[in-house]
Amino acid sequence: LISANPVSILWEQGQIRFTTLKDRMKIRNLQADPRLTLCAIHPHNPLHYLEVRGHAVLEDDADRAFVNRIAMKYMGLEAFPYDPPGAERMIVTVVAEQVSTPFMGKLDK
Image (cartoon, rainbow, N blue to C red; front, side):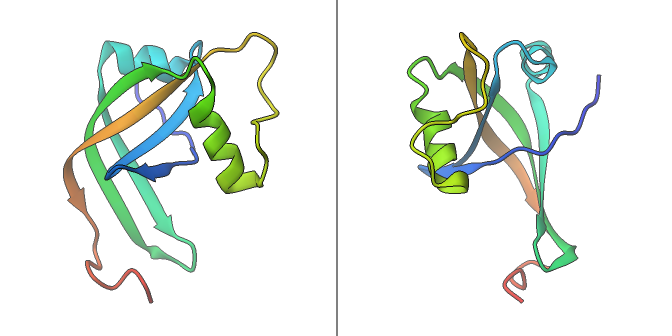
């Protein structure tokens, strides 16, 4: 099953990482087949983009530390406020195998 969903990412320790709820289809899909493609579009020019292909490594975010870092970066909040009570999260780390962009070296323009 192919699906595409926007996610908020963090660049940590040289890796792209994001989070999602443990009961989401995205997690079930990645458990069945860990291959993924991530595409980031330049905010000022949609013709400039970065594509990363690779596979996912999944881990629990039991203490919610990762999702709270996302909340701080993107919302300025200490804790992510939108999960229902008892929700469990997973961290998805992208292991890049191929990186491409049509405008290599020109993404800052």
